[in-house]
Length: 81
Image (cartoon, rainbow, N blue to C red; front, side):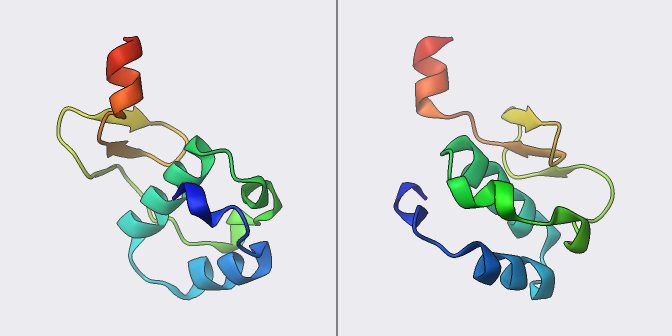
């Protein structure tokens, strides 16, 4: 994920709009924000269907309230907490 800093926001926007898996889109956006990619702020998420309700990737993980998804706890979060 950290090597995706040079993605073009217009291409990511198109892919997020046409891709159908809600869980994958939410996970992708969560990870992109976690890694601080600058193109995330250029996306228009109002055009992206992120579904309704909560999703879970890992039971007992960290809940991201913005994207309503539970993801695995980052190993750096474990060491710090």
